[in-house]
Image (cartoon, rainbow, N blue to C red; front, side, top):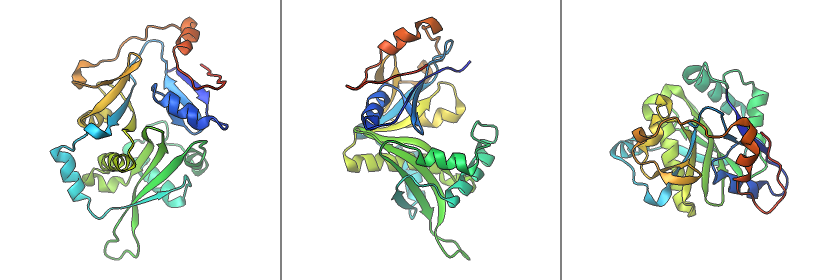
Length: 254
């Protein structure tokens, strides 16, 4: 059974709280920060890329060359109908059985716009094709800006352009943006050992995972496996005491 540790993300200290807890494996969903805290499983591992140490592989360079001409537009966190249409097409094609498949436009708007921290929507558009009058939306990423990096909260793309590897391209582009901004990390979310859908993350060198209370190089991905969570429900209070908090009053709920 899934269990999460979570806290509200709001008020004038929201950015500080987000910066602090994100360094300890937490992720944001709208105005909530959460981290998996399951009783019998410890498989979900936060991951991030060390920008300074990253070097694109041969396949990464091919992707960058293949997608020349894609235009990046950075905007405030504002949802549009065009984004929602692309989002639905992406889910219907790639994640029809996922938990987000039934999201309506109101829920989608909340996902994009409900944020108490510095967030951006990054749109990628492709040049118009024959009989098209304008650039078309190819991919979108909701991105948070931390004091030490960029966090890819959620991204989606046109599944009809699967041959372009747009998911990988957006990660590569975020690495480039972080490098330009002097930010040391790009946070990707969670990596689960053995999950085929997440194998692509292990293909990025300079990848770190948050494990045993610290960030460490992933090393050989096959060396990691789902481990038993050593804490029981009764000890959740002790678990919370191990979390470093900024100098402010915070209430964290199980």
